[in-house]
Length: 117
Ligand SMILES: [Zn+2]
Picture 1 (cartoon, protein in one colour):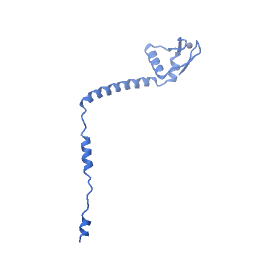
Picture 2 (cartoon, protein in one colour):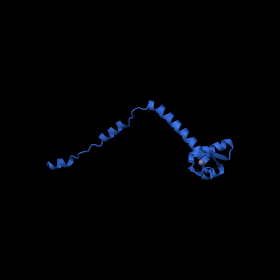
Picture 3 (cartoon, protein in one colour):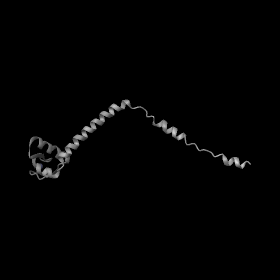
Picture 4 (cartoon, protein in one colour):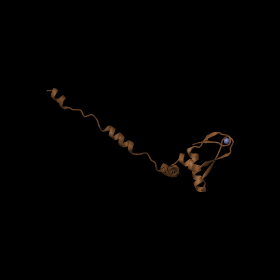
């Protein structure tokens, strides 16, 4: 969302990540304003929580999704480490070779025998 600094009129943007952090912070501290610091004059601009929520209505969902994703990544990383030791060359290639050799073209000998007569 775009914010205009009330002190120097500079427009600056809050990303979804910024808003998510701000909303989480406000929720924890029971605040209704977030001090968005202007990149130019570095003064805090009060951004109403309600206004931010209008821009990002799914923020609670987004936090949950993020928490879930981080847990999943952790589990996956752990699993990968545990598996790397147990990984052995798979027996699949052998089977593949066998199958390739099998379909040998069968020659029909019947016609040859007939011609000799
Ligand atoms: Zn400013």
